[in-house]
Image 1 (cartoon, rainbow, N blue to C red):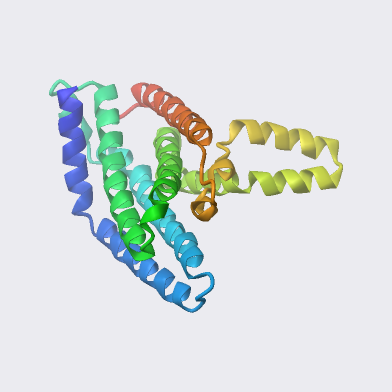
Image 2 (image 1 turned 60 degrees about the vertical axis):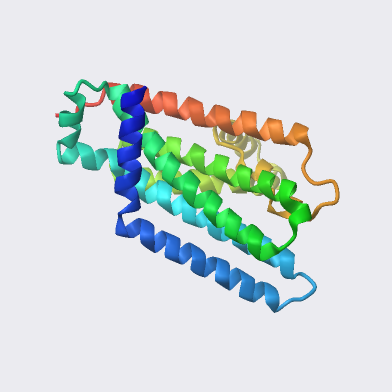
Length: 253
C-alpha cells in the first residue's frame, strides 16, 4: 500500500507541473469570473445563474483533466518504457495502475474542491452550504466514474479513442432522460428496446444533476444523497476493477 501511495504522490506532482493543468486552472477561473459577470446582468436570478454556470465551469474543467490526462497517462508510460523500471522495483501491475489512478484522482479532487470553494465564496450564501456541498459532491463522483472508464478503455484502444469514448458516455449519461422521451414518442418497439439496454448499461448521470437543487427549500434529502453515493461509487469501483484486470493482461513490452 505504501508503494501505491508513493506512486500516487509522484503522479500528482508530475501532473500538477504539466502546462495543460495550468491552462485548465486558468480557464476554470476565467469561466467562474464570466459566470459572476453574467449573473450580475440579471439581478432577479443572479445567484441561480452564478451557481448553474459556475458548476458547469467546474464540471467541464474536471472533465478536461480526467479525459486528456487519463487517456494518455498509462500509454505514455508504456511508450517510453518507464513503467518497466517501476514494475521491476518490485511493483505489481495492479499497484502501478491503482497508483496512477489515485494520483490523477487526487489532482482532480483538489482542483474540484478549490474551485467549488471559490464558487461558494462568490455566492455569499452561507445558509446554502449543505445543499451546495451535496451538489458539488455529485459532480465530483460523476467525474470519478468517467476517470475509471477512461482508464479502462485506454487499456483496450488508442488513447484518442478512449478520450472520445469517455466524452460520449459523459454526455449520453446526461441525455438518457431526453432520449427516453423521444424513444417513447416514436412508438417504435425496436427503438424502445434498444433504449432500455443503453439505459441499463450507461451511468445515469441525469439523475444527479443537482445544480438546481441548491435553492430548493427542502434541499437534497439524505436518502437521495446515500442513493447517489452508492450508485456512482459502485460504477467507479466496477469500472476500476475491470480496468485493473485489463491492464494485468496487457502486453507492455
